[in-house]
Image 1: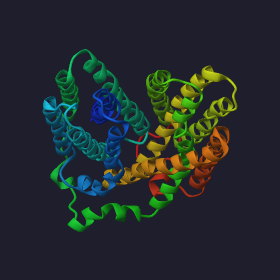
Image 2: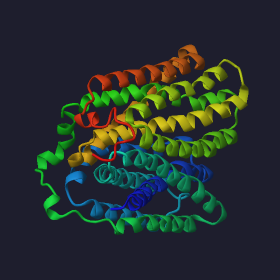
Image 3: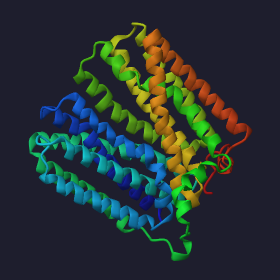
Length: 410
């Protein structure tokens, strides 16, 4: 399997996941508001995130039954059929159908993500995983831009039916690379009991080093999540209007995230894991400094633009570094399950950081909250480096942790 094909396949699969999510999380709320629904009613769309939190429960079943090609083609074709069925829906006549559709697409995308991540771990060598995570972050974000931006623009100029025909067409294009994916030989497929498939995620969580690695993820992400939750309200309190925030955090933020994904992937590819994790983590902690200064009343809107660009690029680089390490820690035999467990930890850290950051900002103000987040991000990074230097765990991390660009495989 050539590197070009592997990259093309992963790009198409992650775009296929991001495209519907972008539409249902970005474009659909706009359309529903325009149709006269209340903000409280529209907030029900937050259910789309639930499958991404819970997907670890069915990850072992997807990981150890069927084949990646069959699962992926099934999910992709089902998405296309569901998209075509939505041509006959009307958001102005009922919210239940839209919420059910959003939840259904989220279930498909979350399940497809289990297969895609497992496939990436199995088919990529050590160096290629840095590029894979740049693709993961960048292609998914690009898919969201297509779903939340391009399709909304199509709707503004045409109608509901044309919009979903376009979505179905885009999803169909993402199927083409999957058609060329080889099926594994029958001898390579393992069999597991129903009990193992039902609680396989728990058995994997209790494997040596896995819980320790979840601590690594927490330390590396918590400070960043404390700051991230405050940025939207902070921009409002700084006097920016909704249009300005949409441009800043939407268009510019997405563009800088794509750039950060490319840089982060290249950095993990060339510099090695330890250097990428350390440098990106320290840079991420430092990138919050402009927000601290702005919260002190210095710099105004121009400084907020600088802060957003820095945070978008460097924050995504740190994400790529962590996600690459998560792939390294995943056992190829249980790749989808392991990586999904780690990804679920990342998702769960979000609400913890959100609550902590909001509580601190309410009590002391934005500047102290941003400062605390920055300090925790820095300390977390240094603790991660210390822990992994002392005892790289799981064992697969030891194979890549201090090795630089000379790594060429597992």
